[in-house]
Image (tube, rainbow, N blue to C red; front, side, top):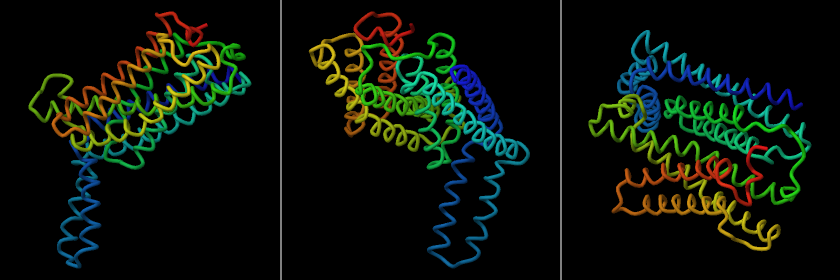
Length: 329
């Protein structure tokens, strides 16, 4: 089972990498904003059909919607097929990812998130799942698939090459039912925040492009969805993940009291988890404050993800503390 899990990790990375290439083809050949316009046209057709019985208006809308779907001739057809191929490959990579984590659990005879390798494996699976849910609910944001799959490939590649740990029983310090509660909540929040970070970063790219900036990376904003939609998606993902991250920190404090006799000791892991929590709380507060520009609030969200990465990689691999067992054995 352990060997099968390792092979499935390679398959998952390959699936996400191929999906990334397909999304990149759609991004390169697609007519700018075509996916978004198709969604808008579909809503317009529904409104026309519901509010008016005039055939000429409906007749004029249908050819335009068809033209948008085609996205401008041969290149548009290539982009359309590439987009669907990207979604299919994305799903195939996700299925391999699920199978990888499940077989890892069978191999270790426990929940498969007892070390840093498994934590990243599970968190990226949550991120991939969150992305597919967003894609189903909002097909117009499909151009984000290029960047989500890029993040998944990078994280899983680093996980397999640098963080890999042989399957085995839990360390005695982790053999607690709180592992299933605290770590599961942290994994869930981290995975959703991964997609939130991608949405936040691309919101800033699109905002800069709309402001007339043409240098990289703002030039990528040419084919991204509209700024308002990206910004709302960023907020909703963070608003959903923040209570889960809060719950994870609270459960961690309760577990610390049971294991070490104190709720909070400013261990490096605890400190950076709290720093990330404060930054994300600051983002939500800034987002709800009319006097704060949305761009500034979005930058705070990006800073929050940077703190999460320090908490994950910096604390586990560089700084020693009571949570050092979470690193590579």
